[in-house]
Amino acid sequence: MKKILVIEDNPMVIKSLEFKLTKDGNDVHIAHDGREAMKFLKEGEFDLILTDLMLPFVTGNELISYIKKVYPQTPIIVLSTSTQETIIMDAFNMGVDDFITKPFSPNELSLRVKRLLAKS
Amino acid sequence: MENSTYAPSRGFTILLVETNIIEQEKFSQIAISEEWNLVYCKSGIEAIQWLQNNSTADLLVIQEDSLPLNGFQTADYIKSELGLALPVLISVDNQLTEVRPRVHSYVEGFVKKPFHKQSLIEDINAVFSKSIEIAPAQNNRYSLNYLNEIFDGNESIIMESLGLFQTSVDSELKSLNNVLTHRDFTKIREIAHGIKPSFAMLESETGETICHLINNEAKDEEMAYLIGELQQEFNIITEQLSRDFPELNSEV
Image (tube, rainbow over all chains, first blue to last red; front, side, top):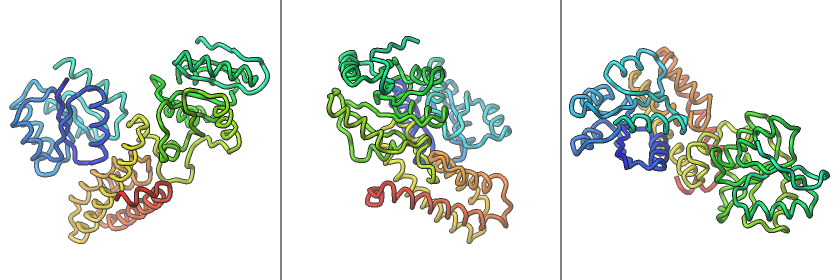
């Protein structure tokens, strides 16, 4: 069972991610903001991290920098409602592995997650 | 495609998606005795292909847990993508909950398995006694299609999500109005960005568009108007949700 950390503050999006990723056989942990995410990350490593970019307390970019420094091998998928090219490019430049626009297609989410978990 | 026609040529044409061989055979026997034309499809996708390649059928009976598209997803595709007013009955193994027919308003009914001749005929007659909608809930400002897709038609989780929509968006709108009084436009944009997916998940194009405008395009002086419009859209959706699902009011 793969350990996935979801960092997201929209409760409906959290519910959908938790349902889908758990159904796909993963061990899903939820952080509702950047601070909570940092606590999880200090406790141990994850096989995959899905994170929003606009988070309370610690921004998505700060979080991505931290993850890349402490767990450079952990793949990251960015969740965003934004389709702005600059935001997507910035995220990729910081080393994220993939990008999913919310609300996501369940099949697309499964495929992208499985692909990265197979690599990790 | 391997469709097989069992029954005599007169009467209804019924597409059946059922993987349980015993239930298939029972249905087939009932179809023969009632002189229905039965077309057996191995999956919802095969039923969709059959409908694309043939003149329309009179009814689709499809098992709830059909794969890769479940019964609800297949019904949704037939009505919204093919634009066919084909009545759909979902066959279920488990007990029907009271809320299920309302969550899945775009199917015409449910039939319990194991199939029994008398109840099956009653269920089918009930379908033909009501009007068939091509797309459900035409007048609603929300749709459950996406929630049905993402939650595999699980109505208790869909209901939970509707409750989350009501409580979380209501709270965020209060925050929006509060930060508006402080003219904190950066925070206003952040909040709109955060609730945009909630409207999108209920397929509220208006709500989603207003959130997008607030977050990306609107000038500071337009914010008060747009927040008012967003509040109004939310009020309409919650009124419709309360009408369609009165139990939400007691849960919130």
